[in-house]
Every structure is written in C-alpha cells, then in structure tokens.
Length: 194
Ligand code: IMP
Ligand code: MG
Image (cartoon, rainbow, N blue to C red):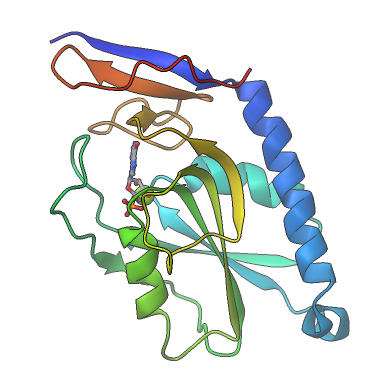
C-alpha cells in the first residue's frame, strides 16, 4: 500500500489565517459587556490531541486574557468516522461553572466530537461557550453543531498535519495535507491554499 500526501494549506497560509482568527476572537470578547466590566480570563479548552498545535499558535496571538485547559476525547482510528462514537476520556480540570469557555478543536467533521463535548459541559454550565475550529468539512455536521470561528472550509477528504494524524503519524507537520492511499478513494480535486 502506497500512501500519498498532497499539501492543501501551506504553513504561511495557516499562520496568516490564525492571526486573523485571533483578531476575530479578540474583537468578539472585547465587545462582551462582562469582559469589559470584569476582564475575567476566557477558559480556552483544547481537545487533545489534535488541537494542540492550532491552540498553541492561536493563544499566542490573542490579546484578551485567557487560561488554558484541555479535554481528552477518544479519536477515531483510521480514515472513516462511520459508526464510531467518540467518548470523553479526561474532562477539563477547571471549574467551568460561571466561566466563559472557548472550545478549540482541529476540525469539525461529522460534529460528533463537538456535540458530545457541548452536551457534557452543560452542568455545571459555563456562563458562555464559543467554539473555534481550524478546519471544517462543509455540510457534514448536523445543523445544531456549529463552530463560531472557522479557519478554512475544506472538501470531504482525509487530512493530516498541523495536529491531525493518521494512526499517530503526520501530526507535527506544520502544514495541512490530504492523505490517500491506493485503496482509499479520495476526491481528486485540485483544491488548495498557498
Ligand atoms: P467529528 O467528531 O467527526 O467532527 O471529528 C472530529 C475529530 O475527528 C477531530 O477532532 C479529529 O481528531 C478527527 N478527524 C476528523 N476528520 C479528520 C481528518 O480528516 N483527519 C484526521 N482526523 C480527523
Ligand atoms: Mg480531535
């Protein structure tokens, strides 16, 4: 089996868009009455392990006050999510009651991961919850599972790099690429940024 990877989002393009997202997130919180009054830190919760690279670059570019926390959700082994249900393995350590949460994940695909996290954090409930994802496979998640801040909309291909892995591999590449092999059919679009 020969695996192929094809870059669709170059490192410089990723970093430029993440800087823009940080401005969008700053602007959102700076407009909130509670933030203007209290400057209470936003609890940024990264979904391990995929969100780690994106989260690290994003929080460095934010100017609002933040605290960091993590949640571990089981991931899907292999390139398909069909019939698999993610589970929360490690919940965040912060007391989220009364706090303002920004959930950060690498990708919004079927929406099962975000749905399970949003459902599990309802009690004791945070005061507010916003969601930022670097990538979104458009039209795959049900309409009630949405992200407030989205980096890039991408086609429904299996992608790796910048936090996303295939079987533990490719996670630390600084760019995003489509992964395919001779047996796994992918769309052959010429889609890409930079
Ligand atoms: P969802 O639950 O289907 O929305 O997918 C969310 C999680 O599945 C992400 O946080 C990733 O860990 C993983 N995932 C979904 N699509 C891909 C992909 O194309 N490549 C690598 N991991 C993916
Ligand atoms: Mg993940």
